[in-house]
Length: 473
Image 1 (cartoon, helix red, strand yellow):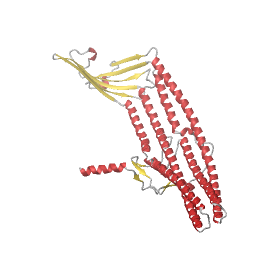
Image 2 (cartoon, rainbow, N blue to C red; image 1 turned 60 degrees about the vertical axis):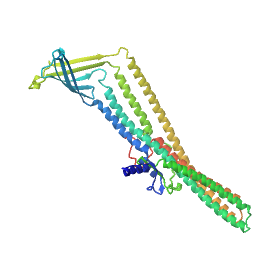
Image 3 (cartoon, helix red, strand yellow; image 1 turned 90 degrees about the vertical axis):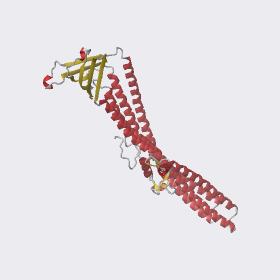
Image 4 (tube, helix red, strand yellow; image 1 turned 90 degrees about the horizontal axis):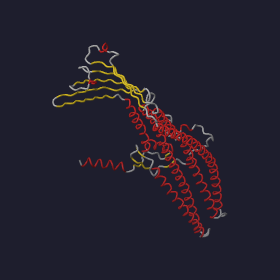
């Protein structure tokens, strides 16, 4: 018993402690990361549960058309006398067309039996139907529930895509923050190495008397400034890594942490491409619009049902009767053996029904206006994101060229400095400009990739490798 408890304790402890992702590649690309999020994040697992929820709702709605069996027994005894014994059982089968089929058997006897319950000694069979000729003939609550369930099943597909798009969008944003922080740290690492090398050279020249001692102080200050910049970049990278870890899981249960050696794809290897200004695909595939359209469809079902309630309720029942215990039931059937009835109900003013119908129509109009507003908003977001993608693509090309030019200026200034024709102050200024140009290049790449994600999110589709779901599913 103790060993079993120890086993379960260790198992729970293992699940509670984050696991280092040993199987992750040394270089984690955006596609690989989004694929991991799509496959294993708890919200992604939760999104898949929407399908099961929809099937459960559909199963429940179909239950309105399930056949039902019933039975009823009523007896009375007093002072040794059986006043009556009334037994009835049967089955009812609802149909899609508002007609309910039924079959029943009753057997009654007793000293004080109500005459209307008199049946042959062997019992009485009845088979017939109940039909609604007014309210409920074209549409009723049962059919409305099934239609709602069908709409809900489509809505869960849209809801799943919305959850996945939001998840992948936020994960992609975090990835590029991580990639940008790693690239910025690399810039500061290179700058710190260059500053230390220059400080060592200046110190050696000052000790030999070829350079004033004050230059060593300035060179050391440069090293310290580069160290401060590197520490800030290191902190940004650590924070971005922590946010990345929040998206890494195993089967939505076990949290995973990035290995310290795992790095994002280098910024220089990431493609930059402009997009056409016009939207190539329609916004109709956006699951946000699909969800609103399905909300309209659900309200249209309510409106149709409310219109049905304005009609008078006319229910007609007819049952053919057949005595039990006969040798040939077919020959015993007669048009003279039956029971039937009609029920008519109609409110005089219909204020409740008309009020509900008017309220439903108001909601329907509001939702249709909401749909128009969402379409315009999404189209504007797509256009804005497309403009940002194109602008940052052009800016990135200029930033790369700018960084190359600053690199040449810096190298020339360093050459002059080594020849004694320049000052440490000028070298530092060139180096600061070069660092800023590199950081600007990194910043524009991150903005460009984030803008592409924003555009995909606005369209309603952030593709991942393993995603086999289409918006029209």
